[in-house]
Image 1: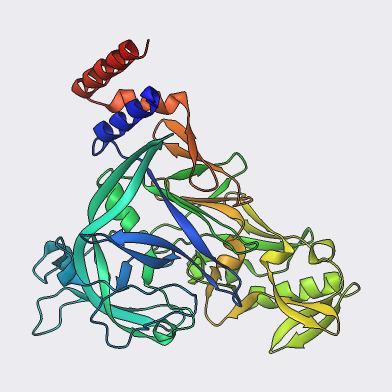
Image 2 (image 1 turned 180 degrees about the vertical axis):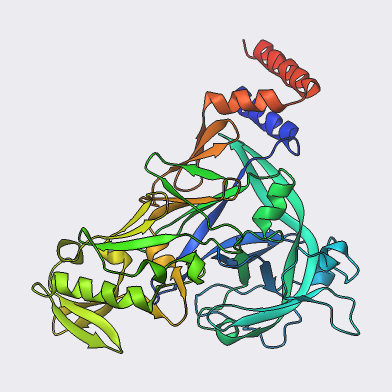
Length: 453
């Protein structure tokens, strides 16, 4: 059966391809539970013909990299139950090595990890992550495939030439098979992050968002665009920092502000609080960690049995933790508070003598850096607004739909990527389309109306 409206939208999608940018949605898999998966990942398509790779979502680094087929010590299989794929530059007709003479390699925008080894003309990298794992390889130019979502049934199959890393050597946890993945998708603020590369060309907005589901099998949604939610609160980013650094002012447990020296979090004191989706748990500096654990224990000691397990403060609990443990609030600059449910600072370690054992999921940071990992990021909308230099969040059920802004309009994403389009989005499309395209579209519309009267 003919569907004039569907055909019109399909024609319009072809017409707007390459004319206007849109938001890009990536489905999310994985979980914050360190005993299940302990990471969140998505899929990217690279090369010609396109090949799909599972990559960890990491807001604590900049570079997108995938494992090269020439890697000498990389895992060949994964305990996550996913098939590992390898990028082969010789199999992609559009792949091109970034040479040492390339302005991109020589420019000052590059990280200090960029190098040009003697005897080689390939622009290489080598860097280490916070957990001690590392990777090295070469930079590649090739095609990224994605769907630019412009509205209901209005999706433009899009491509963009990007720079990414092809890993030829991995160390630490990256070289282990238990949680092996094809690579890491860095979402930092650096010029080589994919979000920066696409936004600099007007392909996507200079903002991205995620909603990581904590319950069940996890999952969620990642959007190159801004998720809209009335309850989102924002805190400004610390200026001139490579990561998503926030000014943490204090911690409240059960409505009581903990006695923590403000210098423990002060950026002027070389202290940092970083939002990092590539970290599973959450780390607090020692001056904050000890008062935090003590406050939790004092609040619940009459209702649970405190115990120690493998150096962790744990509790034997007979009832629901939500009924016993207090809410915790992390208080940031600008009056923005991040309210944590018990499941967002505790981890379940099984059962003992018929009672559930829950342990503090925060770790003591050995240095002056506090890290907000997946344990506290889950079950919340997070918006990283690079244009306005701020990060926002709101507690949210990430199995529900979210609203996403595209330029002057709003689209609604359903839980599985389904969406509906508002009239303001349609008006926006007509505003940006060239007159020649509008004329062709209106001609097609009038023709179809005549045919189906």
